[in-house]
Length: 304
Image 1 (cartoon, helix red, strand yellow):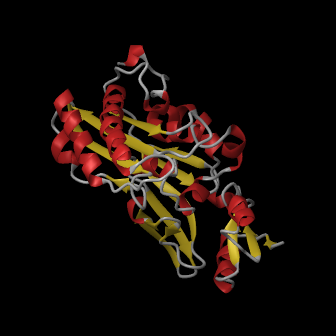
Image 2 (image 1 turned 180 degrees about the vertical axis):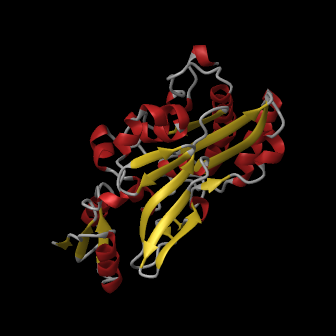
C-alpha cells in the first residue's frame, strides 16, 4: 500500500511532488487514480492528498469570468442553477459523467489531468475559452486549455506541477452552449463521440462560435476554421451541414469497441449541427429555459 502525505498548503504539496517525481502522485477524488492503481496502470509509492487544500476548491463567478478550482466537485457543477443558465455545456457534460456517486467524489482537476481523450469536461470547457492555471516549483503560469493536453493520458504538467484552477468565459446574455455525446449505453459509459458548441449572437447573426470534440482524436480538440463558415450567418441548414462536414474532416478517430473511425466521423457530422443549433436557440432565447439537450444526442419529436 502507498504512504499518504497530507500537505498543509499548496506549496507543501508542490514541494513534496517535486522531491519525489518518480514515486508520488496527487490524489483528490480518486475516481480515476484508484481504478488505475487496481488495474496496474499506476503504481505510486506515495499519495499526496490534496483534498484539504481549500484554496484550490470550489468555483466562483465574477461578471463573465468563471473560476473553477481544481478540487471543485463535478456534482456541485451539475447542480448549480447559475451555471445551468450561463455555462450550459459544462453542466450537461457534468450531468452525464459516471454516476451520482462518482460525480460526488470526482473533481474538475482529476478529470482534466487524467488526459482521457473521451473525458466529458474538456470539450465543454474548451468552448468556454478555458485557460488552465498551473503551480509548480518555479511559480505560477497559465496556458490555454487547448494546449494542456499532449497525448492520451498525458498533459503538459511537469513533475511537481499541479493544476490549481481553470478560468472560463461565461457571457450573461446573447450566448448559449451545448454538450452532446454518443455512447453505446445511455449512462455509465464513456463517450464514443463528444461534441460541445458555443454561439454568441449579435444583430440576429452569429458573432462568435466554437466547437470542441472528444473521443475522436488523441486529445480533446477545438475545431479550427469553423468561424469562417458560421460567423455572420443565422445558422441556416446548409451552414450547419457544412459545419458538420468540416468537423468530421478535422478529427482523427480510431476504431475500437465503441465504434469504427468512419462511424465516429459520421456521428460528428450529425452532432455538430445539432449542438450548434441548440446553442443558437439558447443564445436567442428560443430554447425553453431549463430544458436539457437531447439525451445521447437524440432529438425528441418536439425538438426536431
